[in-house]
Amino acid sequence: MNYLIIPTIINLLVTPYIIIKYFRIENKRVQLALVPHEAIKDRREALRGVIGLLSSIAALIVNDVLQIMGLPYISKRGFIPFIIAAALYIMFRNLRKVLSNVDWGTIIFFITMFITMEGVWRSGVLNPLLNIFIPRKLSGIMDILSITAASIVVS
Image (cartoon, rainbow, N blue to C red; front, side, top):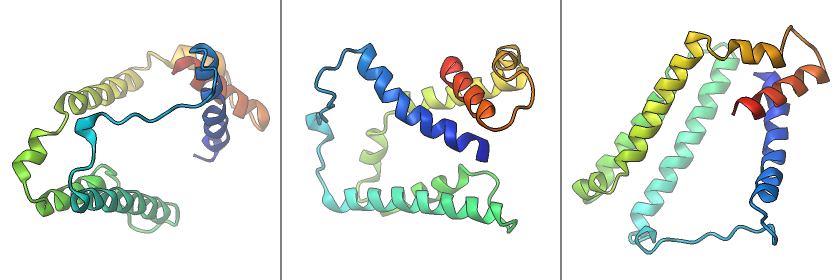
């Protein structure tokens, strides 16, 4: 995990530059545009959503710290946000409306994408390509550069 910190930071810094150049963005500013139906209609429910998001992030961080310290932790990380989302769902006033407004197509897309990528990873199809970038165990800056190059190209 420690090996991925520097390549991740490099990618977070390089990606916006590539996007700005590729799409020829001149003022280098992206403006947020809200679609009218996405405007906050109920502040109380919006606050519950923010609290749920922040508590999910905090719980996942605490879970990772517990794992690093060798203490008991939840190995199936998806369980944490599921429990928080279930608790939030119970607190909403109009439960049917909440379910009808869920973008099920996007959820199904991500579920199938994760299942597909797990299958691709387990099959070993990407191993020859990854072996080109990381032919053997490297150390230091070469390891970081090879992981960064592999993540940019394979992504």
